[in-house]
Length: 343
Image 1 (cartoon, one colour):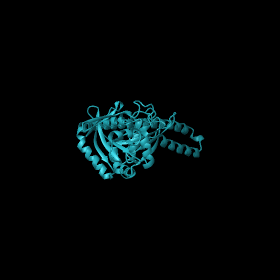
Image 2: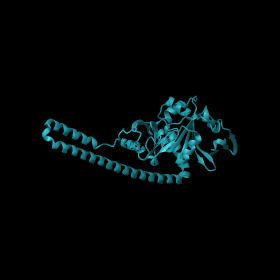
Image 3: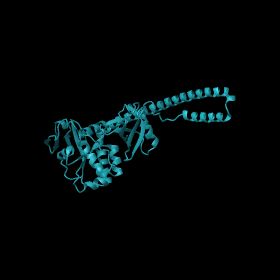
Image 4: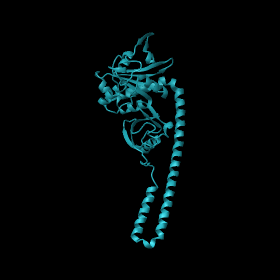
């Protein structure tokens, strides 16, 4: 296991064979504009498409922080575009469905270009002997991070998954207690969400019933007025009135779709699923975040049980605490892209 201090703002050092070497940062401590985070993802998708592991478009220290919060390891990939094995490895292994699903479920993925930006700095620091180069890293005590596994050269999807699975099993003991706490928190969140769903539907049913009764009373008053003047109305008009009344009754009994009146505006949400599938759904800006969950649940997707929605950059989790927020208040209006992360 190689230990590396992760305080990048003060330098990044590497310990090998008890000899410490310090590596200065190739960029300012607080860059005013951050563009390098998107360079890898843009280049990768331009060449290999959108079916790939969910690479976080952020700085490496941010990906490490996210992994620490979620009690996961970081899967680090350094891409060398000019290496002869890079194209086949990305297309056949890294973008294969089994690898994408395994990485999205178990790791926080971060990628960089080995010939530029922060990826170049990581390549100079880790000094990979060959490409393609992948590594499994994790936070370590004493403000350090640990390189738990390195994968060098081309490997098949099955071989990559096997190596990663073995690394998780061997190194995951340190995260055992954290995983237990996370599982307990997950179950509590699920119970809270179920209770909120029940309360939401109960309130919705009450509102619909009140509206139905109100419309029913209104129709009864109109009908009584019509009956009192029945001798002045011809039969054809009476029949037309009954047809209108029946149609109005069906409409006012309502659906679960909210009205787009009262100044509400359409909000478009693009949802990306772990298998690479993307779906776009239109909501109303006054809809709650919970409405997105209802839509996903209605799809009945296999393998999607407990999950949460996150945005990539800036990263934000839309979970139980945000259920009651409107899409506009949650910063998702007029459009947003969310990733479904299975828990």
